[in-house]
Length: 275
Image 1 (spheres, rainbow, N blue to C red):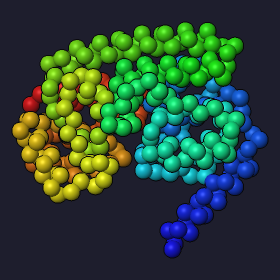
Image 2 (spheres, rainbow, N blue to C red):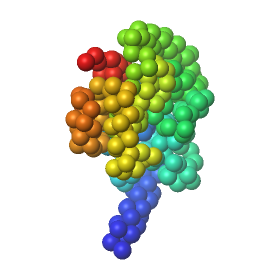
Image 3 (cartoon, rainbow, N blue to C red):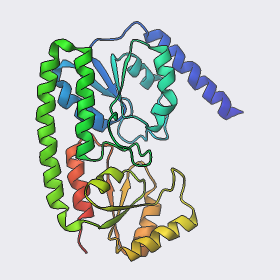
Image 4 (cartoon, rainbow, N blue to C red):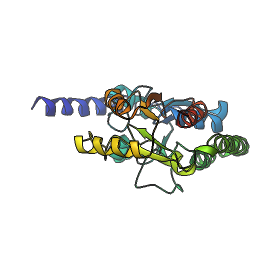
């Protein structure tokens, strides 16, 4: 009963905050769900827009709902760039659309081939290029006067992504087929692009069972895994237990970081680790 009351209070607070901000929508604010999208949106938008992140570092947008204050930040935006299919977005999109029909909502994952519905599409340079194209298209529609500016920045950014992809391919060339363990399966697209094998501790978005953990350990031993990756938002203890069982090293990665390029190379170096 207490939990239900809390949910009701949360929802009422949300709509109260929204009603107070309905008429105060600046013309140059973009909200994105997570930090990597602030990185790519700023790369395309330049100084023409302010870009704000709905979920700051250290929060998990797949399991966390935003506070009323965070929703106010979204309400005070002209454009909302969706990741597309992320947990929070699935639940709140229709509510946001109905409350703010003037808010431009763009699904930046359009055109990306999904791997079993995995929402972590930003974790590979080829997908990031599609995301950048979708962002550019949205900006050109919202601000056609500056479309040439956005297209020029997109071309530069895609050239940069091509260079990043080439460097990652070279760095991981000798690791093709290599397996790694990760708590949350956030590197599916990265693994597919560079011919790696991701073994996830978390199972179907739920806490792993004892049987699943045992299966992970057995698989990791067979594939001679030497690194276990873990994110700040998830349980490091289980990762350490598995790492101890297979003689691997636990390394923290952050696919939700604003420093997307730096993280791509950090992840590559962690996986490329040699015993």
